[in-house]
Amino acid sequence: MESSFLKKNIFEDSLESVVSRKKITTSKIRKMKSRAKIASATAYDHYTAKIIDEAGVDVILVGDSLGMVMLGYPNTTHVTLSDMLHHTKAVSRANPKALLVSDLPFLTYGIDIKETLKNAGLLMQEGAAEAVKLEGGVRVFEHVKALVDREIPVMGHIGLTPQSIHSFGGYKIQGKTKVVADKIREDALSLQDAGVFSMVIEGVPSELGAQITEEIEVPTIGIGAGPFCDGQILVTQDMLGLFSDFTPKFVKVYSDLGTNGRNAVETFCNEVRSGDFPTEEHSF
Image (cartoon, rainbow, N blue to C red; front, side, top):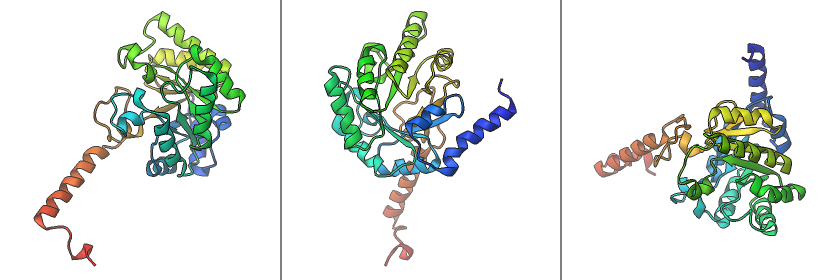
């Protein structure tokens, strides 16, 4: 169990990026391993990026989850590189102090290394991303290594990888059996060897999340992987109650802006229809 002294130091370290608001880089994220918890959240537009950056997140992810929470798709496999470029550009214009990471969407990597490099390069050059994230482990080793060799920082993503939803047969917790858990551990070690600066672990039992975090030298960022990872990430729309199609068990709703927003618009509609808005106060 952590001593109160250690907890105090870790808390103070995690506050450093919020108070000083120095630019967060991939090297800083790597150095936070076992030293300070990494707080991450998604953003898909300029305004949201400004809000969560001012709140002090360490990493902003322009995730392909935008396909579901912004574009209305049933899953992430419909998201295109053009979609990712459009939203990454919008987020980058917020000039965040947080590290800006953008997802490589389905089938834009992992097939031909030249295409992987080209597509990641577009997210960096045109989208102004500072790193890219991709899913998979052993099977994408050569692609990750090629990106890192060409100085494109990579965040890995293992466990429940949403782009593989059709092969998984749905959003199912991964790593419950020893065979699958060992494969995920192998994926983590492979990504580390390929040179990732961090990796997301999604939808695995807490024990497996803890084991991988202990075994590897790069930071782990959990989402439904238990409390023992080096950091956590949530979809902003989930934590703010703005996406109600479904709420995974690992989500904590910190503010129900969805309900509050609907109530506000309902009041507006009622006041317009009753003639209570606008009043002289709101007129020229």
